[in-house]
Amino acid sequence: MVLLGFTKWELGKSNNMSRLRRMSPRRSYDQYCSAARALDVVGDRWTLLIVRELLAGPRRYTDLHADLPGVSTDVLASRLRDMERDGLTTRRRLPPPGAAYVYELTPRGGALLPVLQSLGTWGEAELGERRPTDAVRAHWFALPLLRALEGEGLVEVRLDEGRFHLRVGAEDGPVYGDGPAPGEPDALLALDTATCTAIGRGELTLADAVRAGRVGVTGEGTLAKALRGT
Image (cartoon, rainbow, N blue to C red):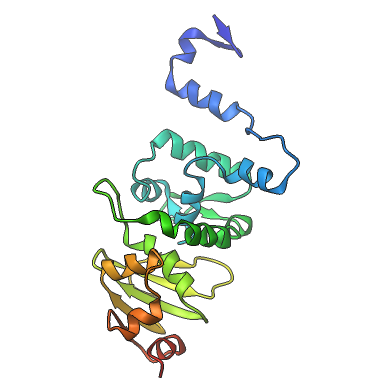
């Protein structure tokens, strides 16, 4: 049996199945509507979550796979290929001694930040209580906290699960990153996961959490002073 030039034996091989997937045209709703066209590009499962991860800057494939629990290696590879084809991401090789490939957002991909922020605001009511099967990463709280902050500056956040930093008001490049802030932050926020979850669910504003003593704010930058009301 021959299908699209491949024998039945070849179709049974995973590498040729991957080849077939790469050859498949992009699916489309075939509707002359900007929302439909946008969903043609970003509507597949995992695509927007990959964007969420890449808003932190260049990431290796293994890092993406580790921070997207539940995605299979085949699906992740397929989505990354599609995103590169559609102009959302690029792939480049790091110079030695790294010598690994990293994926990063193009300006068009980075322009999805307000889309993700609006989606996150809409989805606050869907969070509810954390389920036993729910994975969590400290940096997944980055976008909700970015929505709660105004102005510009570098903010370090310390949570039970770990640290990350935010680039509030950044117009290009990474808007957050794992680990301590690179350099002296304008503000340092210390809070527990329960408080961060309440902010993420829309039950508590960051300003109210600071006033209630649930968020510790240190630093002498404009952001820190604004949060403390000083």
